[in-house]
Image 1 (spheres, rainbow, N blue to C red):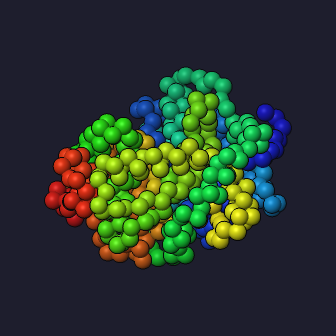
Image 2 (cartoon, rainbow, N blue to C red):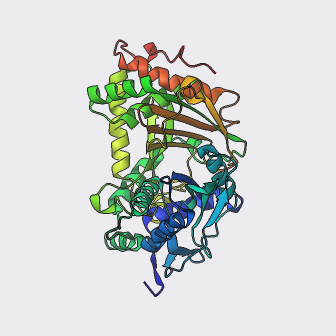
Image 3 (cartoon, rainbow, N blue to C red):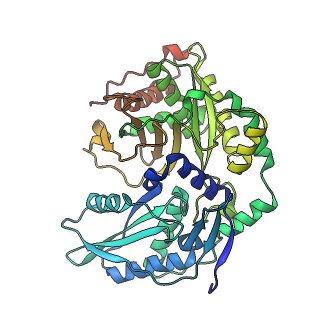
Length: 429
């Protein structure tokens, strides 16, 4: 394309932009997503740079800026022009070193009103290209889009060619022609059932993440999934809610599920941000049968996901007209995100497999609790929380409790949630 193209934003893009308003101007860097992709041995840095720039030329979201000055944001797609991709020499040949560089590059916010929404560089060691490291603003890509880019990068590095792709402006036009009024009505009716304390918490304390990787936990989750005909992610949500209920001594919790909205074949390969929040309020009745409780969590989750594509501005107006207070559709204190495949299998003796891996965060806004799950040969369970919400080693306690709950619940011997033990004798931390 040789001319500028301007149009409305997609529902997913709008959700990201409104979420950034909730975070505030001092926390814009929270939207920067870091990826580290290994490149085949023997390729030069110039080949990797060229492949990345081919992706930029192919996908309009990587050449888009946003006008945020009006009541409704708009996007402008710019013609492709070659950009600079630097090569950075590493002192060691390691994924961790490349990830550290990516994290450093992500600290500085990206000005999506004037800049392209990405940064990229190639890491080298003794002259050999090792990784392509990217920092991409969440308005330009979600986790599904990152997987698309990684796969297509591999095709290009192997000498292949890419076929036609769909673009965000196409999705935005379709959404404008067929507005999702049904989902807006659904959330307007459901809003009064959310737990007020689980909205945006105004908690500026330090965030940390405790993670573990469990082969046994995935086996247990899959057994529950097969037996009950439910998803693995909803089983983890149910056990996570049970563990959090006991830890915080509360019976009802509202989680904002991350809806990926890649529900049709057409939109699966789109590089853009399709994610939106789909809130679910889980009630933990310790007298309930564990399997019936998990089935109920699954039904609630599926209902939420099926209504997860909507215009957040239209919902906010609908909530206002209904006289409902605290009507920001993007403000939630508890997030749950099923990430899909793990980035890589952790080493056999790593802390992830034998104990707990801790990771600090510079984030001081937004959710003060984030349960994130991914699967490979095992299940990765990550509990991110602020110090105010879960102090000391409580994020690790919760992650270990979820692993134990999955394993014990899969045995099927308990008649009530109260009988399900969350004690974890296998995890040292």
